[in-house]
Image (cartoon, rainbow, N blue to C red; front, side):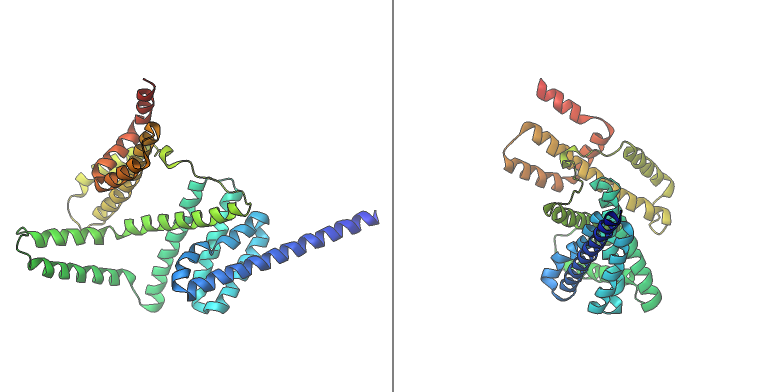
Length: 324
């Protein structure tokens, strides 16, 4: 009995030693990646997407409590490298790694992980914006607006020197920049999701290469938006008749940003349908490249294809046509 207890105690001590050693390695790796991203601009722009990886790897191997301790230690070490102002940044990277690890442990899909990481980045951006306004009296939105206003003025001055422009070119330029200003929220949301996708791709690819089990994406050509997307799209379009053309109203701001996000989703759905069709026909590779270019250039048609593909099962017709 004493031998059994002694053996069990030794095993526990060995497990704890491995846990501490692996934790120290992950903290050191996190600190190195964080320092590279801070002080080496070109390389840092790439290593930036791998910073959450050590926390992810540790969470995949050990329990939540131990992972939280490692996460806190990683933030403290990063503060020594970048100072107190680097703590919020380090916290975001640590939290991203922890979130990715949690979603994998919970058996969630890769798409779910991307959405969760994208939402985390979006919340972090909003928190950073509010913090900058409250504590540093720095309003990033006002800076962006000033930049757009200056660019608009420069465009008008440049265009006034050209003789072949229509009479209302100033209104056209003004409407274009107004659209950019109004759709900043949608662009931030889409940018957050794209950034989340890059973080997940970088971390999952590396984790898989070193033997960790991570979920995989389904093929892009198999993408299928839920039918509820069409219902929401229809409701947003109908709401435009109630909102009117008052570009200063909150309703119009919500409407135009919702349209940008929905149309981007339908653009992806349309591209997915095109890739599905090409996969079934198996044309030469350059045809796929050309189709992608034309699909992006002629994006209204691609968005229409995506809308129809979401509403009805076009792929069934493609498969039936292939059989016949």
